Image 1: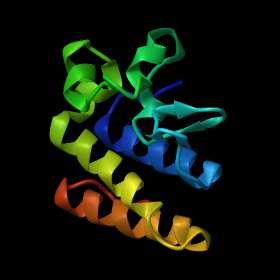
Image 2: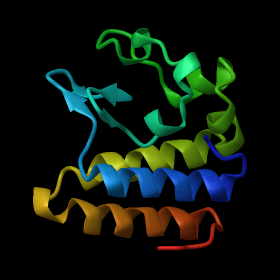
Image 3: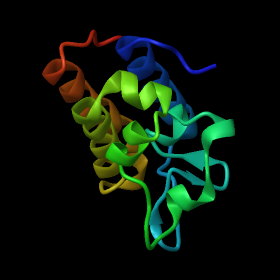
Image 4: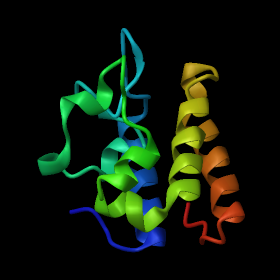
Length: 121
């Protein structure tokens, strides 16, 4: 079940990404969902609201699209925090693969500080 508060959502996303230990990608690049993997925002899109068109390489949905379409946890986070979480995850994969978790944690810690969230990791 996806949590309801900004702090709980933030912690939930980090926990899921650490367990996953990789980015969510296919041959077209980063995806909200790709096989058994999900991106940071992909973890907070409920299954019943996920549409394959969200990941269409020609018209993938942005965070603003998700807010407009009332994806609950994305609305709770707000555009700036949701985009920062997504970016922190995306750039973690640009480093040496064996350092994904360390990079992710460092990037997410910066997000927590910028958005006055507790750092629980």
